[in-house]
Image (tube, rainbow, N blue to C red; front, side, top):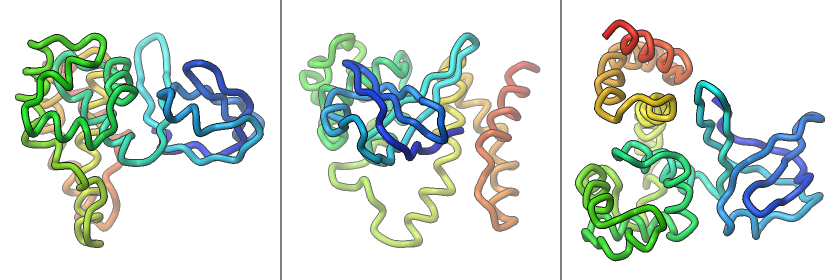
Length: 208
């Protein structure tokens, strides 16, 4: 997984930015707001999320870690893929999405192209208990940050499985199956190895 990209902006297009890293140009799909803050020649550090599919690897770039976390969380809802998650962030700030989901504001969600009333209700139902409240993007204490980092693997593995074409329910089941392995890695004093856990989850699904 590529967690972030640091380098020089080589080009900014209508939908992406090309960042030169070690002589290699990496194309990052970004929202218009993120792109508007970039300029050719500038040195930048952008959090990234990699979506893996059979025929492609796509990097999405974000203005900050909160936007990245929201992008990955949105994809855990049924019917929300990376393009729709990016569209939601292009229309609404992460806190606006938190407010809309927790207050069951269907109108705000349906302002995003591609989301109808039924889709909005599904997103609310599936994310209401997990999306948090506005203003809670940064954990208050060091202990909270440690817990958030330890738990992040599950959302990343889930998003990876959904990106590979598995359903949200199948991804949920696979994530639960590798929880003991993640807990063992944490108990040994390290962070869960997301790539290894993703491979283990894929093996579980292949056997099913």
